[in-house]
Length: 303
Ligand code: ZN
Image (tube, rainbow, N blue to C red; front, side, top):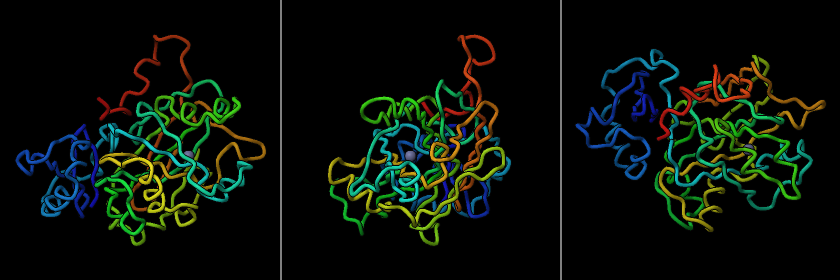
């Protein structure tokens, strides 16, 4: 099943890539707000399956700015650091023996298309698989974990490296939480849609140059292991978002180092989900002028 948050409403994308409004088609049985639907995810999928042959608007005709965040108001956002051995190596850090966990504050989440204003410092890219929790819980066994995932999407864990590494301890959460630093989308795809949900190609390019290309089969802690280990500590809640770590190819690990600059177009893809497109733009010195509304179109779905 493929779903999307379009114009702030939960949509089913049918096998024919047409877009159906689930709330309308079910006579209001489900909320149009995707975040509310995670509470009844299994029921929603059963009903949505019966709508697969309904005809709607072609997905390709949906304007990009109408795509919102697939999980716009998560109660918890988890992010995993150093989850690919080759990325730990390029960061000159050891492969962890347990999860390295931080958060991206919810206000950093953004939609799959739009512009991102670069703060002062050095902003790096990190393509990541994003898992959204359906049925949550505590002490979820590894073998049960995929059943607790509502769907997968693409994310970018954009990171301001100067702040991240300035202090005596790493400042992951704050340095990765500027507005727009956590784009997710464009679709939410249920795990059963993938030939193997533990082996998905993902990557990103800058101005057409491929800078990251990896496969989730190289994760140190695969998605089920992340869910099992997180849920030993904290309950996972419906609609929670998990950024699962980035493969190698980030800018800070390059010689010479490279960071995003104004005008760069960052295109981020994952097989089976599609691609996101973001244009980097310079920060404005004052609150007036063309910089106003800089996240227009990106934060649809955030209320
Ligand atoms: Zn990351």
